[in-house]
Image 1 (cartoon, one colour):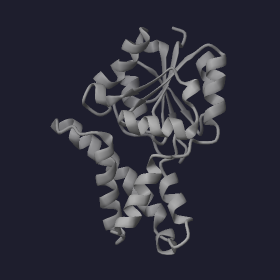
Image 2: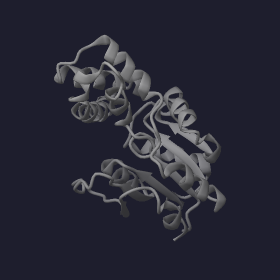
Image 3: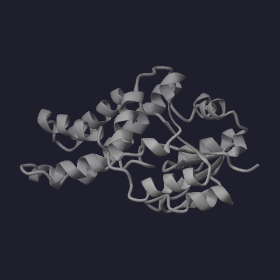
Image 4: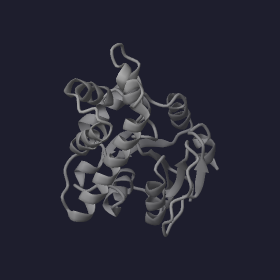
Length: 227
């Protein structure tokens, strides 16, 4: 079936989740943090995701802002950087994450070609609104869908179902794009056509499903959608 809607994960896919730590490390007076920021950024993201999975399987849902803060607290403590001012600055910057360079033009091309576009994210609505506004991409998105409307994180099937309900289309009419291999795999299991944006060249996750496409960035998404 032809693709009708192109739907994107947000954090790590459209928005660079390492940007907050990287930008903070470049600020005056943060020389000590500058030597630690790659580890903090990696630990922060890993714990953030782990906490969503644990909350999903135990039924202990909270919003993404809570797990984002808890993941950062773990990451800072692991690097011996439990400084309130640094924590506050990193959280502030997380609301202003940079989009990857190819994102605005890629989304504009999709819209010009007649595709519907959306975000489907673990992020809470206010967090996503801040990121979309900061990146200036609101005019090339038809919707921003958050797991908060179903009260469970990905990869629960009810999250992916938000897309088919919103666009009134069959599952295989959706091209779902994520930088998380497990997310792209889970969406493939749901029935979406999926693309994994594997910027870091990581191995494929050992799961029952695999993404249909593996890309190094988002540049070719319009070509993939047309094909």
